[in-house]
Structure formats: C-alpha cells, structure tokens
Length: 353
Image 1 (spheres, one colour):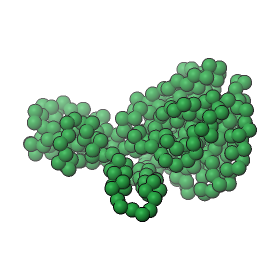
Image 2 (cartoon, rainbow, N blue to C red; image 1 turned 180 degrees about the horizontal axis):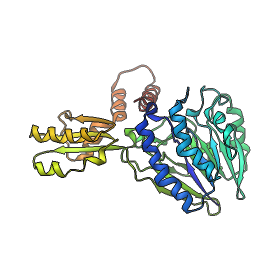
Image 3 (cartoon, rainbow, N blue to C red; image 1 turned 90 degrees about the vertical axis):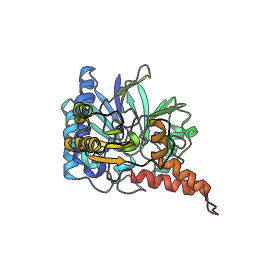
Image 4 (cartoon, rainbow, N blue to C red; image 1 turned 120 degrees about the vertical axis):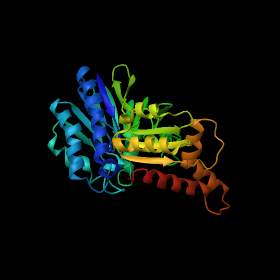
C-alpha cells in the first residue's frame, strides 16, 4: 500500500497571512490532491505541526485549513493519521490540550495520535510517536524500548540534524536511541535530510527565508517495498533578485517578467547601481505587481565577493555570524548553552511576520 506523508503544514503561518495561505493552497490544488487522485492514494499520515500557533487558531486560518486540506481529504474518504507536534499544543509540558483533538471531532476517518501507539497499515507495524514532553516522557520512552515495530514515524527532536538548510540543531535526543528501527521518519525540522535510518521529511512548501533554495514537497511511502519517493512542489514563495545595471537597458526593464514576483517575498541584492533612473524603474516594476514584502540590500559591508553564492553566505548566514561572535567572546559561562539559546531565539524569530 502506498501512503502519502506530509508534515509541518503550519496552517496560519506568518501571523495568519492570507497571501501565505493562498500560496499554501496552490500546493494542495496543483500538486498534492491531483497526485493522490491520479495514483489512488487512500491513506495520509501528517507528522505534526499541522497548525502554526500554539495558543489559538484564527477563524480565517481554520476555515482555510478545512477548505484546502481537511475537507478534500474527507470528501475523498481518505484515512488520515495526524501526529501531534509541538506547535499543535497549548502547553509545553503536556499534549492534553491540542488543536488536533478539537478539530477531528468532525472528521470520522481522521485519527489523532496524542499518545505513542502502534498502527497496522497493510501488515506493516508503525510506531506513531508524538512530540515528547515532560508529561508523556515515560510512556514514550517505554514504547521506544519495547515496541517491535520496524518503522517509527513521529515529531522528533534529534540533535545533529539540520532544522533549516545549513542550520544544525544541538538539542534533543540522540538518533542512536532510535537505532532499533529499520526506518524512522520525522517532522519538526523543516529541512529534508537523511542520516542513517532517520529521515526528516521537511516541509511541503516554503514559509521563511530559511526555506530559500531548499526544495520542498511531500513523500509517498510504499509499505510493501519500504521505498520512499519524493514528490517536489514547484511553487516558490521567496525570490532573490541580483541587480546590476551596467549593461541593463530600458528594453530589458520593459521585457522583465515582474509578474512572477507578485504575492511573493522578494529580496533585491544590489551588486552594481550606476543608473538611478533604471534602478527606480526596476524597483517600481516589482512594487507594481504587489509582492507580499520587498527588501532591498544595497550594502554588502564592502565585502570582496566573487559570486552570488558568496553574497548569500556572507550577508545572510545569520547563525554563522552569531556562532562566530559567541566563539570570540571571553566568557565564563557555557558557550554551547549560549549558542543553543541564540539558535532557538533565531528560529523563533523566523516565525514572526
């Protein structure tokens, strides 16, 4: 049996931004459900963080989530398992009060996994592991040790994996604790990666600048062959434009495809600006199509950079800069703990509009 795996859908992302919700909907309308229909997929597993806000869900975002995801699944009579993630719960120490439990009362073919449990899909036992917190720690740890399932799916925080591309996380469990399983699939980290038997599935679509140039999509898992297939999402939300007008003509401006930047987050990186008229025409062209947000980076701190990749690395790798500053400090306190704190603050800031 082939099942679809998605994770970290974050309905209500970026402070319930409706343009972001429309972008998310394009994934479900153009990619996800057409694939499920074409290949007759009748089981979906959502590996957590279905909603973005822990404390509340706005009416607008709840309606959008139902319209684009929950209702189409119910209409198709697709059985759906949802693992509770850390963004789905109100309190950090317990999963008892969570958005999934309240929502699924209206969806009979949906199954909420607040407690660790083993499910059987087409003869394959899968351990479903929710977000591990103080309240359920003993129960989760007991299931990890005693379960005979060969596959584990969860919303796990394992150290050494990248939360975002190029941004490793230093907190959480050691992956060795899950070494008994043939395969471990997890949500929580937004970058798709595999090390050993552990695969972080990554988000289905871009939501922050840390997602830039990090291919998004969802997966199809075959319970018979144990093979995992990645289905890419072609839609992008974040665009970098490198501006250099030395050889730029008015005809170039007239022929530029500004429309692809409509309803997008756009960052214009100025490499060389010599003609203020052409520059104003170019920026106006972007503004006129209505980006969600437009940033212009005009100063690279006078760095001698050889190519566009250098500009990205030097000007935008915030965590590397933070790590370098921390390492240079003469501190009596624990530098790894300070680095962990700054990484957590940075990752939290990425969710703020």
